[in-house]
Length: 76
Image (cartoon, rainbow, N blue to C red):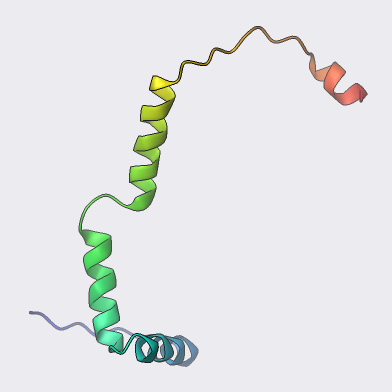
């Protein structure tokens, strides 16, 4: 396993230590877990994007003709 050095601000480190303490782990373990998560496949955003595209393709709804004009919308 390789080691890396990370520079963070004092406030960030203090918050990370508090989170780690609450999870009964270390800041290093939190970083390892996060790095594993972000490098282990498609992100949640990418998975959500693919799901939206899949659902859109399967949708049965139809868009009818536009019955309004820009002027009509701003007349209200």
